[in-house]
Image 1 (tube, one colour):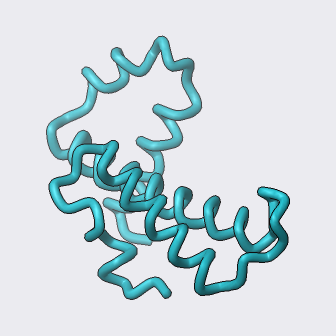
Image 2: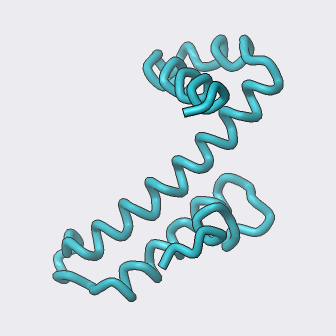
Length: 104
């Protein structure tokens, strides 16, 4: 793990392990470089978690409909990620790190 990744991981842990009422103070203490790195890392994690949560839910049949199979689960997970990216304000919500990696 390189120095930037380690520092970003430490920033994420530092912010997420404190009470939400402390987030304002934590964010105000960040340098512009740290804020950019934290923003990008959190957006990436949101996308990954959204995809995985949707995919697992469909494959495990957690909605009560049984295993939906890979194709359906993958399609639904991509749709969920696009929704999360739209909610985060991305101009092109269907694009992003997971799409660029060819997740299928």
